[in-house]
Length: 366
Image (cartoon, rainbow, N blue to C red; front, side):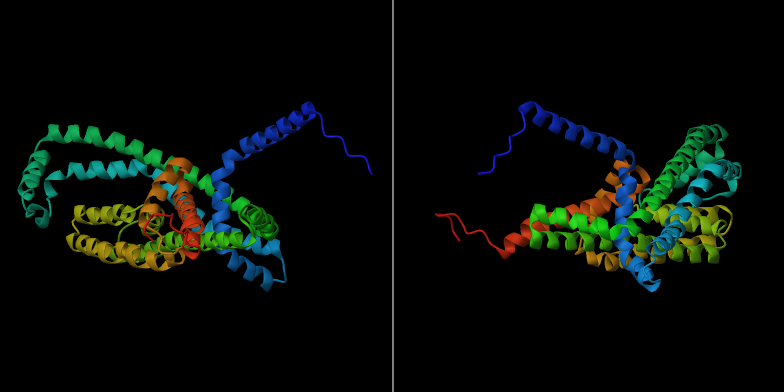
């Protein structure tokens, strides 16, 4: 009989555990600053993998070239609008404040619209308050002091946050290049890991569910953002609103937030009215409500249908929770994480239990 190998001494066993634990902790500490960017890169690569595979096969298996083209496309589609918004908010915050001050200087010529004056219960009170405010220099000066300086600080802070988000997007696109190029190898390793944890059959179902959910959510969020930005650009150009391309980029970013585009086209309508263009202001308000905001009601459900009828509550919680947890890039990552978690939980528990119902306990009605 061959000799049985001696088991390691207890001290050696503990040393191995300690070394493994230190490696895991060190790896986590190194990757934590890039966790949001890595998650975003995974989400984007999973969503756009068919396009990358088509380019790679079209160009004779040149994976690096196809990955480079995909990364450049991501920079144009996502990073460029974010960069425009960040640059504008930081550079032109003073101009926005000056415009507000100019409107206050010509306050006597600015009247509330008739539909506001005729609002039931509150219309007359709002009109009286506005008349008192515009007729009193002291009250107006106090209002300006309360609004102008904090408003400028908010604009600069928002621009800085968007700038930080731009840096995260750039890091994510850099990581995405390697995920594209080496994605099949990493995918095979991940599939093996999931198969060992959940079984080969159930693991394949879970992976397919996760992939479809990611694509559905991303197509819904980014597709809706692109559609809203496009129709908003048309409306701004028709109404003659200055900075139409910049406002369209801002619409793209804010479309990720519920009711976000209203701030853009609503602000444009207010500017048109304040500059003695009431007709175009009415057009902008109608166009914004009927066209720009309606895109969210029609395009997003169609594009997100691949996510399996995902609850809008999860999307809203994911947007705000992701922003708190990961910053700007969390607007994309948060909804995807919640959606995938919910769909995997549903596939693991509800769907499997429906296929294999648990028999009722004895003594209970069937």
